[in-house]
Amino acid sequence: MAVSEVEERPVTTGAIPRYELSQWRSEFGLVAGITAAHDGAAFGLATNRPLQETLQSWRALMAAVGIPAAVVSRQVHGAAVAQYGEPFPSGLLIRDGFDGHATRTGGVLLAITVADCVPVFLAEPTSGALCLLHAGWRGVAAGILKAGIRALVGVDAPATSNIVMHCGVAICGSCYQVGPEVVEAVWGTRPPGPQQLDLRGALVEQALRLGVGRVSVSPLCTVHSEQRFSSHRGEGGQPGRMAAFLGRPRA
Image (tube, rainbow, N blue to C red; front, top):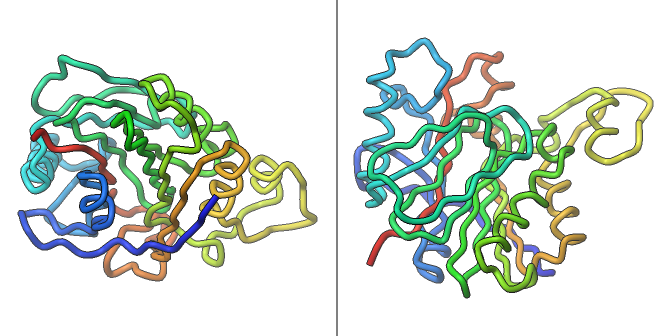
């Protein structure tokens, strides 16, 4: 398995500042990325902001990337992945209890909300199958990557070796100190005290075991780049939420 470092690039078109994987757009025809921290945009589904403001932000993102339908969920840090086919309604579909979404339907924007957790982008170019995962430590420990790959295979991906994966903007290992019980849940061994945990590194190790053919990792950290991104830890537990997104515009 080839592992490379790929940095998301800023995009200024549309009303929503964001960072995208330009390589995924040029090579696969996909829009994949994450919104920048922006006071005027509200993507979190459990905030004190009026619902209308949140819906307005989501509509602006959909318009900016050119995809008229989107799905997002009130996440629970689990490993449940929902699958979507046609017909898919226009507008924003809000689900409950899913931390991942998969489809091979064009014109559907898969979305999650993050503020330190890892957005995991998965694509199988041959079949057109896509999957986007919200991976915090609980989800990583619960096997959300395996569940996402299973959902991708369930929409006609012929083999895991054909899958392309990117671990996006998230808190880095040097900034993420956790207790020994968290390390044990993710890695299976219990250290004597607090440790630094690299969630993206753990996901890469899992991808290697699962036979994913091509993996890239973002070098961007939500804490180190707090002027550009929202961070739950860096902002004392009260940040905004960014939207990570993945979709294929209709031809």
